[in-house]
Image (cartoon, rainbow, N blue to C red; front, side, top):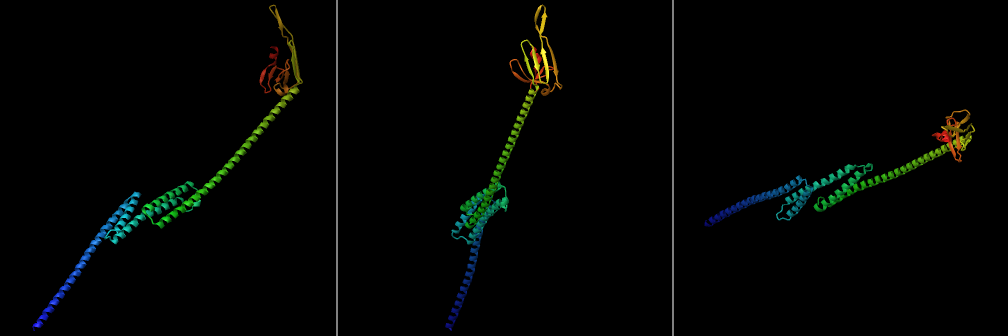
Length: 341
């Protein structure tokens, strides 16, 4: 009986201990879950805090207008991401968020690169062979060269693009530059050919003009020579047809004869006044002329005479008036005045 009671107590104690153990286990499980839940909350809170810091950096980057400052912000963000990865207890979620934000920052520069290439290329258009604006092509080439330098600086110092993208951009730029330079060369070649052609045409025109002027001058000279020869012939003909001669001596007697008319003049003179005497002039003359007008120097007047010293004159003389004219018809004086002066 007594043994039975001991066994019963022992069983009760074991049951109590088992129940206690079960309770402890249950409590432990719930406590662990509560702890883990709390730790997760702390972890998520830490991740959220860190990601918020990363987002704030990106927002400042987006609002920035200074390109150089944005490049520096990108560089700083990449350095912060690398440093965070090496930090003990770093959250993978934060590292992933870093990569996402850095990619977005880089993408803003990639968009800039694409827009720059499009803007420059659109100034020329797709059909480069039809473009004749040499300066526009040169400006586009210069802009691409400047952009290429910018791209190289961004890649080497800020790693805005990966190597494959960098190579692709360079290849695209080089293609445009080559096409534009080839077109400029073609335009300049055409301009040079046009310039040479214009020079040749101008030279030919100048030579033709010089030849024309020379021909005109030669024709004018020939005409002048022919006119001079004609006048000389007329004068010679008039002189020979006139056949006139004239002479006088110290006694103031003279005679003049011509093939077409004749005049004889002779005279002696006496003059006295208040018992003094001096030789005077008696003048008598007769004149006959074959018909015609006395106004025609070449045909009606006498021409060509010789003075007492044998000097010959080719002037024209009107026997009716005694007036003398040169070969051009200009009045020279009166023959009678000269003779009796």
